[in-house]
Image 1: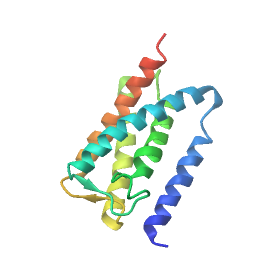
Image 2: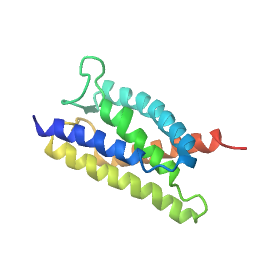
Image 3: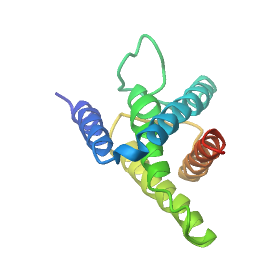
Amino acid sequence: MRIEWWILLSVYVLATGILFFIPKNKLRLAVVAFLAQQVITFLTGLVVVEWGLLEYPVRFFPTVNRTSFTFEYYAFPVICAAFNVWYPNHRSTLIQWGYYVGFSTVLTIAEVIIEKYTDLITYLHWEWYISWITIGLALYLGRLFCVWFFKG
């Protein structure tokens, strides 16, 4: 089996493992964040691939969709769920912005490494900083939705 398939399998195992650490009292928040992020990444992922900005040469369900099912529909929504569950609500604005920067940076570094050494993603008309911005924006939109959903 190629290294790409092992990476995809590892991502599923790791993301599922993250779900087991979500506290029961925050399960509803995690589910809402997960589903909201799926909507966000579904729309943006399709646009990015259809406009020819990114390509996913190795992916699950290649005849159904040209986006990365693993990242768009499972891994990133799980990360967004964890992001919202452990969001530092009662900390300073600087800490909260640092939380966004930290998550965006770690995910972008992982993506750049994967893009450079595997066939899981190929940048066509894309750069790392665009990923960093879009990841941060997607986390922010997911957070806004969760705050709105649980308001009151």
